[in-house]
Length: 202
Length: 202
Image (cartoon, rainbow over all chains, first blue to last red; front, side):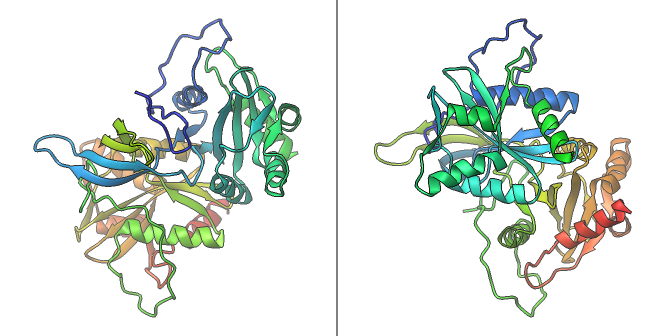
């Protein structure tokens, strides 16, 4: 069955990404962005390149049943709106914190499905010198962008000041790093962070 | 009602710590260790000293009910054993990752309620140069220790090699940093990390 978050996004069971033999095909295998990121994180974990995990879905537990001789069963609980980002962890001493968002829109990225308190969280982490970004997926175009918080923030501010409620594709192209889908992991995003950090350290 | 984790620990609703006027009393106000840490984290967040959050409890969702005109209701779910630590975040560019454990034991800290995969996770994060530690509470003695992973690891290994399944109080005293409970936040653990990092950087 399809389970949805309060924001309507589909809930994906956080299952361990299956290790596959690298495929010659570079085509999107129909995974959701979250599955693609989990696949990359699993690869990074196995190779110890980075330790990045998806945070569990925050849930408000109301009622739990304790059947004899079996596991506690939650019988009433509700989804809570996440107050932080979906993914965080560490790479080479750097704190990594990011949010994954996809859109079917072909011309711009709507800011509607980004929670203000998530952006506030990202700002706080950025001020503590974390590596903070979005991974944006234009699903229809099969295009992926790694959008660092400091480059994203002006567009968010523009919206808050009454400007457009989305970022045009060309603005995304000009202000973020495009991620080329590869064989395995399909969404190998770490090299872009490496490149970005090298530029910053210069 | 009391809700318990698979390990029997009591589940605490992750509610926002209330800001109080600093009290002259330095006595433990009967908070659980988790509440004490949440109080400190809330204080750090408000002052932007560090951004550290407790991870949501990992839950396996089996069934969700969607009543018309009201929030999705989870009607069947189960607790999953956490594969990482309870708390992580960032302080001054450093990735912070730790686990909080308490015991009623007065003479030693039992290793039984520490999950092997949590220790594995801590090792991985430490190898990525994160700041990794336990906050141990001897509840009966009202004593708190900040035990860094690199100092803790030999005692874990000792157990794995067939040695004692606990760390004696004197071993804890000699290999970790004692945290003095203060007024507010009661468990102000950040200064110890600061001190520890200064020593490492020397």
